[in-house]
Image (tube, rainbow, N blue to C red; front, side, top):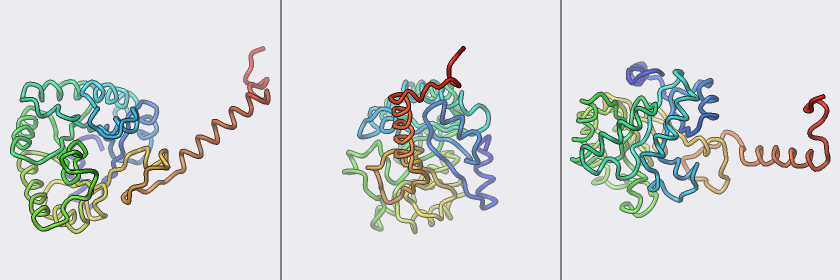
Length: 265
């Protein structure tokens, strides 16, 4: 995928969209050569790359730094979206535009923004009118984890479901080209997906969304202690890498590495 038009084209053709998070140059090079449609530099980098328990410590500077690394690794082969980090879109219009400028100039093609209140709609409209493609994010919004009382499924009752439906429509009206639905009941995600003209991307939202996104480290099994219901691991990365490290250690210890092949005459 090369532009926001490809997202809409996929939805129109009923073709699913695959998105994966990525935070560094090396993995971006690999993703760029894969069939994955698009990359998200998520504020989850606060967890995966910096070891924080939540996404809240992510900053505009951190997002720009990782976005630049991913952009260099992916080149022109993948569409890149990056997150507005915690509070960066709540400090007034000038601060919002400065944050958008830094992250977009670092190499993002679009920005993702959590939430669906009146303030958010106005910000989305202004950003879109200013040439910044915006991806919405509803349901479980990790930046609001303290307000939500933890990482919990959202939209369990009729009132909460009606609110998320309304928020999705309002974000579409404000100009969002795509909306992430995180940790909401599958039936609700399906209803929202069918009601919108723009595509939805789910994470913990069932199979009826227009696409799916997973965190790269979760997909690769890099954190064996983290196993939420919505994650599927496609590789036992933790054990595979640990085995490689141990093999290297053994060969160094046993003077099997470096051999003559890895040495200069």
